[in-house]
Image (cartoon, rainbow over all chains, first blue to last red; front, top):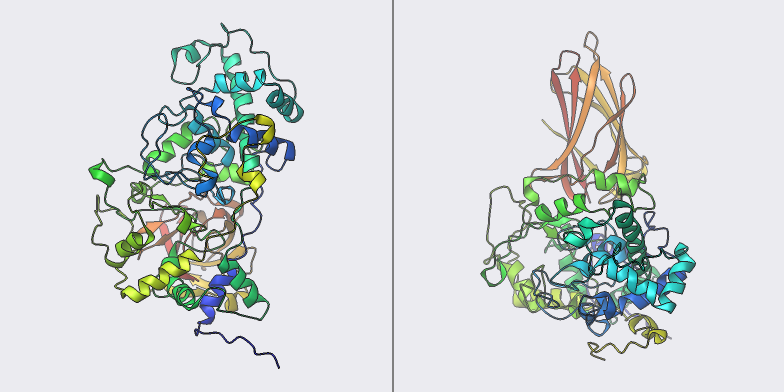
Length: 409
Length: 127
């Protein structure tokens, strides 16, 4: 007679319900503003562009430089280091397609819009939209893919009309005819939509937590899959710790913004967070309700137009997904904490909080947990590490001939 | 006094919304129903249909404003909602987003033809 595996930890039905609502990770939501979102040819082009350092000003930095597949598509640094030193920790691309807003401060409202930002950011890739489009136009495999999804590549061979290095904020860009700028913007948006199509394939893989939930759903709960500490950690996460206030659903994030009153890293000037990201979003030509959106009248676009910014958003940052969290140190928007233990210690005491104004939201209370409880919480967080995407998706496409020098594999 | 409405899964079977809510001065009754009508969702966009019923002798509602806040957290919604009038005493509030579980406070402000505001308030707990 077979022995049935008995649950080792009593779990409240609400905890089970929380877990079932958090697994499995569904396919990415529909993306009406990107008509290429689920186009395989666009994903192929995006895959090539993601690993292509020629999109950067010095032709030495690709998206994959900071979103290293060997590091769960992060860079392992506190803050990004590329053409310059950034202010923010590099978030993983895994599961990014599920996010409502992109960047820690929400300055983009779509994956395709996000993909365009670092290309021109002087402290990231420091390239230009004009050079990026020209690179695609002059690289036959890229041009062929581009034309198969977007029609004929515009003729930008005239370097007087289309000067190298032109991007908003440069005199060469401002001197261009508005129609020519529009031509470049449209093609540049297509590149972002292609990169997003590739990134939509980078889903969080199945984790021990997902395997445990699947067993629960099948009526064969098996706590050996998670281990007792992680099961106890789940109970705390969804219960007494209150983590679920902001971390819930398949991404384990509410996808919105909160102010934890974190201490500024290295005594840096506090960043306004959402308070600074919102004006950047409104100024972007690549937003969901903007001229390059494929659905500027969609509900998604209307939701961008209806963002409310209040005083409580100053210093608020996006709630990160906790999928693969153990594989993506350091933590918080500025890489404030090196380890998960450090993060949990912060939540346990809140002793390092710095209140910068009296309009901040008031969600957190010190956990005051024992070391054993904190260890259980960390065990649960570690059980959220998923299987990586396929080797094919984690590698530069062979047809590019790119040997990514940054890869740690 | 704030009424408390628990929008749990169990209650959702019978639908979650409110009837019999009145403005504090008793001048207007408010009936609100989430769309789809089963449940007030956490962190998903949804619509609210609002019916305003003037008490006998009351002025008709000229306008209606909706807001939702989490007083315990000291924040409100992250979206601006603008009710759209769909009939003489009816409005729809589109794309409401309550992004956290916990206790939210709904305010339905009826503004009469003289510009006087009449508030009905209800607490809604999201699991």
